Image 1 (tube, rainbow, N blue to C red):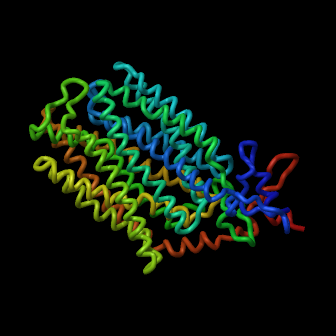
Image 2: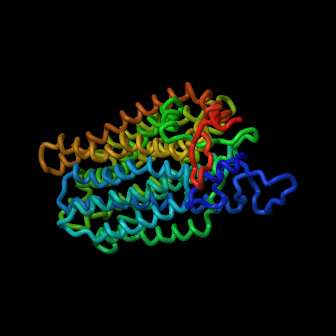
Image 3: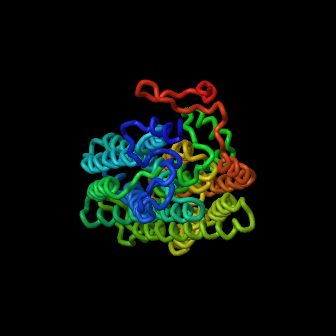
Amino acid sequence: MTGTDVSADTTPFFSDDNEREGPTDNGVGSPQPEEEESASGVSDKRAKLTVAVLCYINLLNYMDRFTVAGVLPDIEHFFSISDGTSGLLQTVFICSYMFLAPLFGYLGDRYNRKLIMCVGIFFWSLVTLASSFVGKDHFWALLLTRGLVGVGEASYSTIAPTIIADLFIKEKRTNMLSVFYFAIPVGSGLGYIVGSEVDDVTGDWHWALRVTPGLGLLAVILLLFVVQEPKRGAIEAHPEHTLHRTSWLADIKALCRNPSFVLSTFGFTTVAFVTGSLALWAPAFLFRAGVFTGEKQPCLKAPCDNSDRCHLIFGIITVVTGILGVASGVQVSKKLRIKTPRADPLVCAAGLLLAAPFLYLSIMFAQASTVATYIFIFLGETFLSMNWAIVADILLYVVIPTRRSTAEAFQIVLSHLLGDAISPYLIGVVSDSIKKSDSYMWEFRSLQMSLLLCSFVAVVGGAFFLATALFIEKDRQLAENYVPSDDAPIVVPKRGRSTKVSVSSVLI
């Protein structure tokens, strides 16, 4: 039984010809198509186009996610809700996204990834459009639709990085991942900008939620006609063996025994906590700071006064700092790898430990100087953004190819469960508990005090990445030199169906 036979029998009707795991054996002298320039089965040109499409969708995902934050004061006024209730808008989305990630991680390791993403993004576009028609007395419907948006995003976020991993290796993979993760800050910033600007132009925050659905349908078309499914693990598989699928439970046990993966996931959780808090509350905090200092008028009717363009400025800062942070993180890591194999977690730790004091200063200076506040936010977000591409790269090189979608899903669940699923709501609840009255002063002060939690969490994240540095070299070598044991389950066809048995039971 050849490695190709095994793989072919594991691919259900969802898959296409390029989804088989490992290198294919076409026989000596068999002609190879000219367009297949790598073991992945995808030409170099098509691989780059695939990354471009995935970047576009990633940008769109984050743009949609943070459009709500760009119009949050109007939503609060429209529904007459408190800070704690406002935080639920982000929390319900993250919760559905988080709980569905393991399902899509399981499917992504076994079925056609392109089709899974197409279905998920199409569904996400429909529910996003539906959320823009919610009436004043139906806040629960807005919560429901925002929760359903997480279904589509879970289908994409767990799978897209693994496709890039199957197209490129080593420094090329790092470069492509950095390009892919540029879309996070750029999309987030565009979410603030587009949300607030559309709200200003139309005078109705509902229209801000109607921008991304059409772009989402375009993304589905691009996925269908541009993206090509690569062979899983083929570009980095060793010629002397073929990787075998194991059960989902076995995958989870293996991941839990991988200290670099576990510790970096906890470190990334703190990044998610801080970014989730700032994403939802920073624009509202800056608005309240302006009201507190007398620079802005309080929001008495929608749309709220945005004459100083705080949402626009914060959106631009998010875009620029994201690009600078991701690029500088990758470049510093490359330079440092020459001196130490522990460069990646050390750069992540440095980014969080440097971000903490600047975030603290940005929160405390809000009442004294708007310019100083923006400068400190700029520096804090730049250092915070150094982590995005590096953390993704760490996961991909300490986890074997057949477990990567599951690992992505596991990381999404944990980082969101303890990160941005609870942080917006937690910040809102703490703010409500501190607030002693409904005065403009206490609206500002209570949110200011609650946001200080972000600086503390960033320091904890730095400690997790320092701990990761102790194990990273060993775990990377284990993943690169991984050889399935003799008792690893392989797939044997039985009456047209795939059945998993141990190797020893089929040896003669």
